[in-house]
Length: 182
Image (cartoon, rainbow, N blue to C red; front, side, top):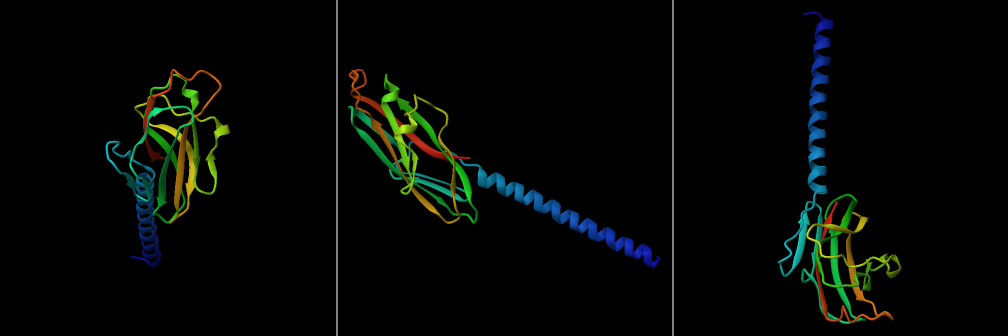
């Protein structure tokens, strides 16, 4: 074997090894992205709600949002946390996983959401409690959380007191579960 053939064989082996390493890296990172970006819904029947998938964790004290026998002016306040256990910033959505809404005038149930520092959804955004749903629906999309950060959210659902006749909805019930998605 000549010196040129030997050098060509070494170059070919190096190119082959580097190609295999790049292929392995691409497969590893695409799999990592799939598992960190996929969130599963929690069990709505649990008394405590805690969702942990890959690098993000969602926790709500008693799991379900409930409002029974509501009258105008009533508010339901729920706190929940989102914690990024990973090493990079994560973008996520807050979802209604399920909801039951027996109200006739659905616009009378107004949503606000804040993270302790910022009002994420304000009353002027006119976000209303969803009609009865059985599949996930986005409440707020495109939220970001930095590595190691924990955000505590406060969700408030207010049965607003209007000048209209609200007797059709007095004493009605609502319930819902929340979760995260990508």
